[in-house]
Image 1 (cartoon, one colour):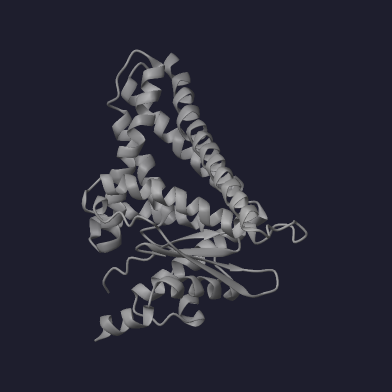
Image 2 (cartoon, one colour; image 1 turned 30 degrees about the vertical axis):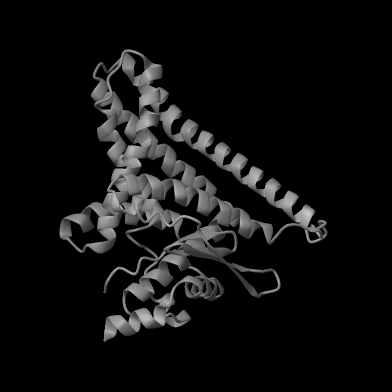
Length: 304
């Protein structure tokens, strides 16, 4: 089965699927119906996608923007129904500008929080071991281990909340839909249900690879100034993300035994970020796929 190129993300009570420039957010509304909002990105990144490493950095940033926008879009369906909605074109423009500002503020806050939790905290936490360990490289390894621990604790804690657990269930539905197609099965609830909820191209696996590669990169950052060490770590994050993207891209296309072995930790981690979905969630995932991808033609060509 050749690579289908579909990617996705779970959102509030729904699934976002992306194929090329097209992406769609399907959400299960409170009345039981499924709303599908299809959009197209202005830039397909065709030129950038030909450049290794750089395309990974572009994809990482683009995924953050599109993913956050999709998350906020899905959440807007569950706002207070009594809230006054814009009626005139001027009011609609103001609401759109306000939404963009809110998304920008949320993105900025998310980046700052991520840097504090996964960069600053492990960095200074590892320095506490400096009283008994003199090797900077060993301290970098300890820092990396602390970063993984912080990430695992963070996932475990947010997974305890009801809303995030449902997001994890939709995450499972997203993976199951993609696996169903990539294994040559028709996209039905029955076939999706029996498909795996784990996938090698998952964002969870990507983050884990970033965490592991960063350990080796940060081992070679040498400076007497802690501030410079920390700044260089942040500067190198995009490069690490680009390298990690290339591995995830390879893993999604390859069944090589070595690649599969290296993919195992990320797949195991998905046991925390995905959960078995309900049939109603699978239906939402199917609607999202069908909005951006003609799976019937794809299977017909693969089976011919």
